[in-house]
Length: 151
Image (tube, rainbow, N blue to C red; front, side, top):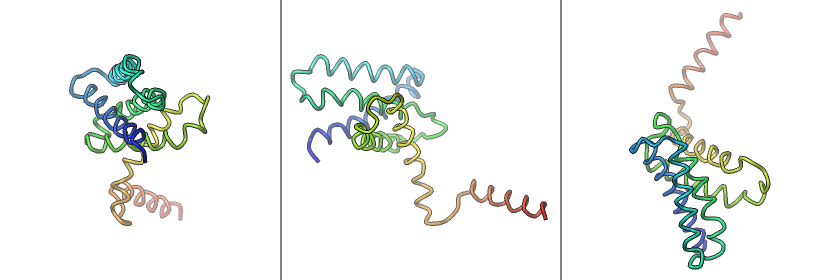
């Protein structure tokens, strides 16, 4: 991994957390917080475009704006700053590996952000090593009771 990819991974995590902080702690709302991060990074890249490598000039605004979609998550769904940062990094990995396949399609950043959040939200389920969470147990109980009623 070269330094440019490391910078993009770091920027993705920081953008997601920064958007979340603006949204929750400073009560800016999800859309406004995401827009603020996007505008800030874009202006930064425009002002310092001669100092930044061309690869970062092209991809940094996209990664930061897309990762800001991760930070738009509700605090009721995900309220852990570390996991939001991890989701931003996962978004960046998805972006770097799929950006050539979705060239010209709308909604690619939002879809990748949704996938990154779903991956992060599934971590607790995967850590249980086969144990079902309460929600899955309730679903299984309801399905069994319906099967008994049909007999």
